[in-house]
Length: 325
Length: 70
Image 1 (spheres, each protein chain N blue to C red):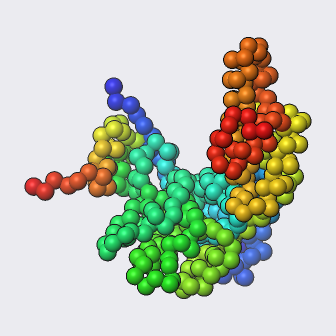
Image 2: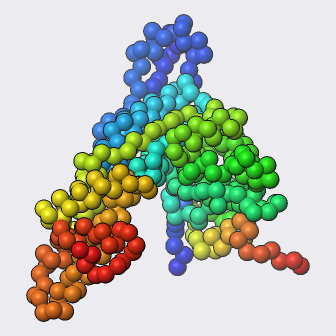
Image 3: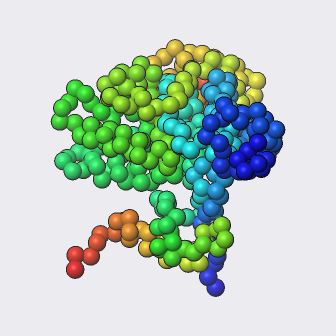
């Protein structure tokens, strides 16, 4: 029996220190856990991530695992089984346009809903935001970014750029030191996500002692396949209330297939750029057609045709010519 | 006349114990600082009745403005 002969309560915050002696007794204590049931705000955030991001099954699985860990951690905390703030700093590795920033944004919302941060907002920073150009310039810049991010998620893109190991006069080291201090002292108030290419992040962790050990979760974002890029394109066109004609789909697929093999390819971002150019071409095509006396239909306004997508002229050197064929 | 704005809620069940509502000035993080700047607790809610004045005071505090040399 519990101390004092009373039955332990599921809502109690005190818990016997030696669980081995009384573990059997606590098996009968029912703990209310409405947050684990379907339809809660946490599920809503994870559902939004599912809808927003094509594929990335492994990334989504990691997020669900983390959500489960933190939800159960919250229940354990209620019983006094957990007291320390968990380390939530993360590292997102992957090529550009693989969804790291979007996931970081949802991570902030998730941690807010789970009650692990007070605000849940996302602050995106890079070397330019953190590192100054003269003595005494770096600390105030870094502190200001940290202040703005407090209570939410600080996402540092291409984090390895902060610190230039080959330049001993570089002020980046000061920013890294402040960052490390804050990651430790404000563990319960700020979540830092360091992001960038995988190989460069690994080198960064080995160059900066103490950084890697402060990162609890590593998430790798793979490149998208051609089929997934097309699914992203469909999602984006739907979001912008456009429709790709059959010819446009085929042209876009071909364009992406070629684009994937060229330097500077940026996954989802390259899809977005291709669609932005297609929308531009569609607008020019409609404009010119109406001026030539063609009757305009509502369908014209939301349909992207094959000729809008090919865009070789625009790809190479900006808007060269109207139709780009 | 003065609008009642809920800046955040206290919730002892949460690991962080308090959550901001999103109506608070950008960069304001500590509830105690909001109190210092004029917010009041009403039960579990941290409330401001003059949010523009509170935001203005916070901006001064955060060194957004150049300090008066006198």
